[in-house]
Image (cartoon, rainbow, N blue to C red; front, side, top):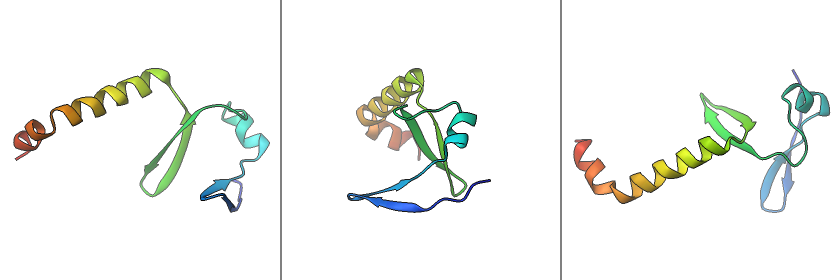
Length: 74
């Protein structure tokens, strides 16, 4: 387990990830990653193009059929 500090980067907040942690996760500088929050934990994972396309299709569907989905959810 590693401990690091959150730092201010412009209007955002960044975290420094030690090199050995990146290597263990098979990640490197410049890699595209996804962030998700589960049970109060931030998870960082390599971005998956198929996943991103599926999520975008789901968002488009939800936007297009928003009212229909709201009726069905009742």
